[in-house]
Image (cartoon, rainbow, N blue to C red; front, side):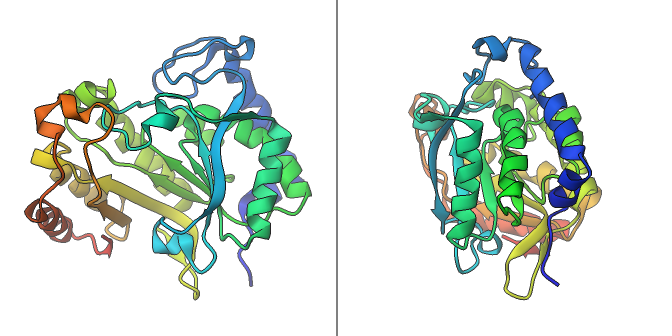
Length: 301
């Protein structure tokens, strides 16, 4: 039988409405991410991420550059959300995350975007950097469901998420796709102003795994549900990849699908840091793959 996302049944039972009310209630003193800025976004105040009351989207399109299980034959229905709660100094999408380029849209517009992407044959709805806009995303879901939305939802985040918020997403999100950026607190503090990043990441990964489990891929090679972790290799071993991958293998699952990415390039302010101002070498890439294999991981790469 075709996969039916749990959010459909949750909506029928009235659970989605309750989650929407809970999440919107948090915008009055925003605690949607671990920074807990407590600004009143309902009145237009902006916290660290730069997002206020309005939903801002930079692009909506079928994406064919994501992981193969997301792309399938028809693409991943990607909605790039503007602003970010990490604001890494080397961000490749800095025009969107740091500079806030995008268009303000209504919650109804977001529902229409989801239906449009499904009509194009996309295999999922892929929310890129959703953490700070999750209230508006969940608010748009009931209308989208009433209009026929029935494909998996992807939570494509930076890995810096509140455990409280993730628990409110249980039964709504089908595929979690977090970055696993750093394990060293000094490094995460320097480049993302988040010294607690690894501790937050570990708890987030455990909760995501509890909700959706290992990535399930159907007979078409398309992901239906589960956890998919991304790790971007950076020069000079800055990310602390060994601790990250060993944690995933030991405390999450050796069957975790891990995409070890080699496309780092010095963007935005990376040139101001000598240790970031170059691409990675082939040796750094192969060393990362070797670390993954020695940890017992075997899916993705």
